[in-house]
Image 1 (cartoon, protein in one colour):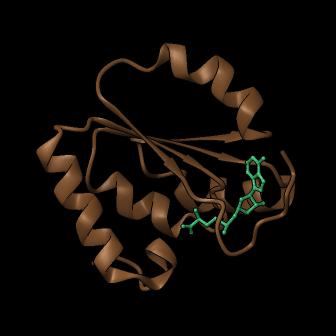
Image 2 (cartoon, helix red, strand yellow):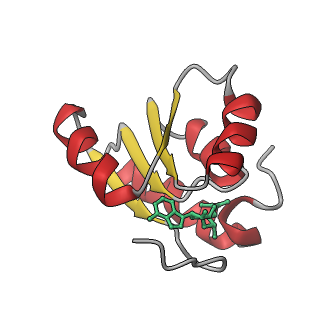
Length: 109
Ligand SMILES: C[S@@+](CC[C@H](N)C(=O)[O-])C[C@H]1O[C@@H](n2cnc3c(N)ncnc32)[C@H](O)[C@@H]1O
């Protein structure tokens, strides 16, 4: 079952993403801003691989521990533009780029 906190608690958004994933045969999702990893986990049930990036070290460490048993989740520490530059060329297949810096925007670009 999807965590209530995934997609900032918006069940409609989760369902819409699921439809898009199916329609466009999306295999990979990139999430910028892992936070606690609730949306990351929801995505991991929809596609083959999820790549997620978190800028805050303490948040990254907590989420890394929480998500460590999910084999299709790859979590990175750093600022999205820098990580994305290296990461995106290495991802094969359809990728849905998902920008999720809503709510707790820190403006750390
Ligand atoms: C609103 S939360 C993300 C919520 C999460 N995607 C979810 O659905 O549960 C925003 C997160 O983005 C992180 N963040 C802010 N600027 C960032 C950047 N430049 N690169 C990566 N992460 C960033 C913050 O530390 C915070 O954890």
